[in-house]
Length: 168
Image (cartoon, rainbow, N blue to C red; front, side):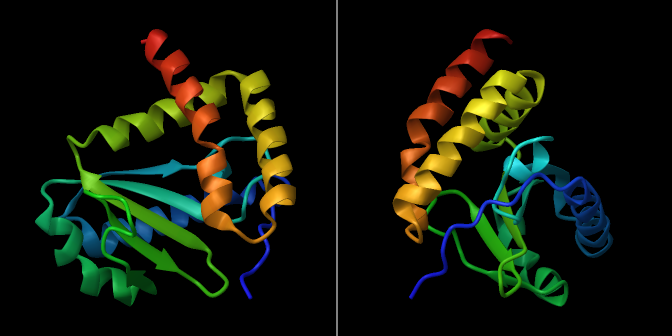
């Protein structure tokens, strides 16, 4: 049986957990990584989230995503290829899961899309609260079906991306 989707109240410590992980990743992967960002709901102050730190890494080139696998394993990460998203290198850590690392070549459009979404919600608290309400409703509806939970957020996320693009 799959674990239920659990949303935790915002924890100010999530930013520190990201920073600690960023430092560790930079120490062992400094040659491969162009930038490391905190993304996902744990990066947006004040809203509930699954307590998993999402990290976005911009890579110099695609080969770096596989080349750093051994170094990432030393930090406790498991390489999961693209994890179902073409162009991505996906790593996960912890049981229960504590971290997800999403890597793309620095020119990949998903990098900018994730950062736009995060930045827009950080600067628009009403939209951030609406996102939290939606996530709570979906967690109740889908209970332990994380794929359906994620897909059901798509329309909201696309709307925010359109709004964010219009602000740039």
